[in-house]
Image 1 (spheres, one colour):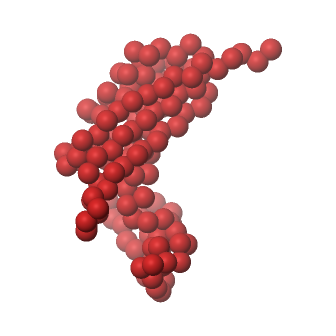
Image 2 (cartoon, helix red, strand yellow):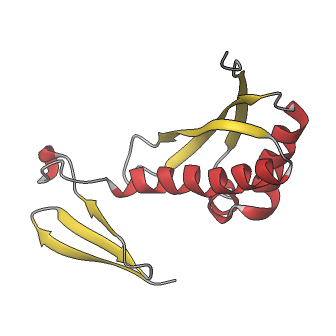
Length: 142
């Protein structure tokens, strides 16, 4: 995988990778930025959430679970001293649907953790990651 960033002045950069999509990066004004894009560490947290979310929803669909809405939240704690690395994270999976099986959700989350998600596997080697989930039963519209 190849990725690059191009400097746009001040602390603003444009990131791109092999897919050709672009993402704006910037910093807080107190370090010379203008708040015009993501912070790099925010993108790491989004990468973690997105990686495991894609695995889990794919597995849930294969298990024929009626998921109508799905969200993955990552709460990452950072060290107070430089280089402000992540020191721990909590990943919360929130499933909305009809008749969702808790065992299916648990298995999908476990498979993502142990087998499929490279972001979780990599970050899990350097910090604890807690996993939790919530199932929200949707009402049938009448």
